[in-house]
Length: 401
Image (cartoon, rainbow, N blue to C red; front, side, top):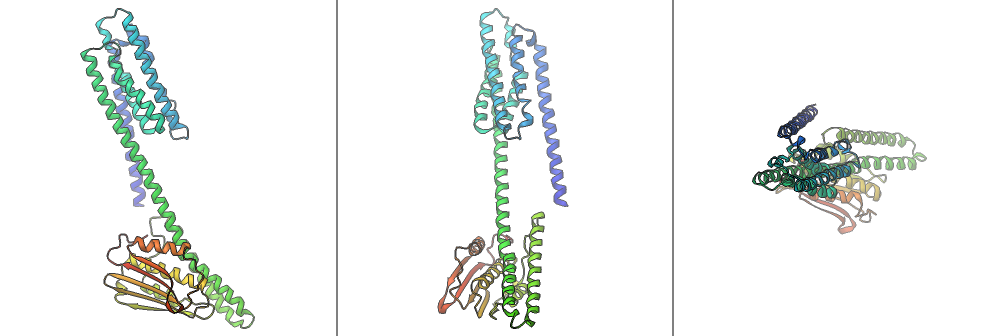
């Protein structure tokens, strides 16, 4: 609820700022139009060229509503380029007309401040929202149109000063628009990165938790089919275990889906008791069991390394159940000392058939190394299969995946 209120407040603040910005720009354009009108530029001998040039900035208005569509950025940039080209053409026309006629000294008033202000606004919009390369070309035309307009009629000290101030305005508009564009690009990149990380986290959670329970369901169902004919009384127990595993899988799914809708963690971190229960409930069709051994202050293990330990144990037991169902002994040893959590999962069948390049082991290695630890999985001595993880306790850089 708090995050929703903050987002609504942020959206309201952005709306207010946009309205204030539009009002400020509109005020500047109206004042510039009033100054031009009082100077008599629209009633001078250059009035025809001035009116045509002043209409150039309005070429961008019809396509403003299309800026969010696929063709919008290109159309917006094209309209900005056309506005700059029309203004440059009118400036050249005014220069030719001024050279041919006898005009009073007041012809220097053909600065058309309204057009200059409007072109600066069009420049900012084109650079901020236009397509990259068309916007660059349009920006060159717009900058030239703004800077050259004051000196279009005659070259004087006043016109050069106005051109200098126009250059400052163009630079400010370019810098502001480029910064806004780069910020928007960085925001989109960050959003895509966060979305990718969430997808990877969800995929790992789906594999680590749901696949563990589903694998148990499959193994229990296969075992029930085998003993159904010879020992039907054991079928009831197998069905109960299948029901329990299915309920756990549904619970994990619900938790992950709720995690996608909220800011909560996708899966619970777990603790030592849950880890001990996970190992105690592990069973193989051939009767093999797993035992849990601990050394050191395991109960004081922080949440971040405990999450990694829980995932490594779950994935390792799932691999044993899938690839080594004939194992008789599986040991899970967790040692905590010297600021390091050492985890070893060993079963008595080295030829498990597990693919060391599979998604599960790759995901475990990524998660362990992300916490600053090391991960190894492969055959060990005496025909065993060992999974080892060394996870720092105090130097983890994040608490949850």
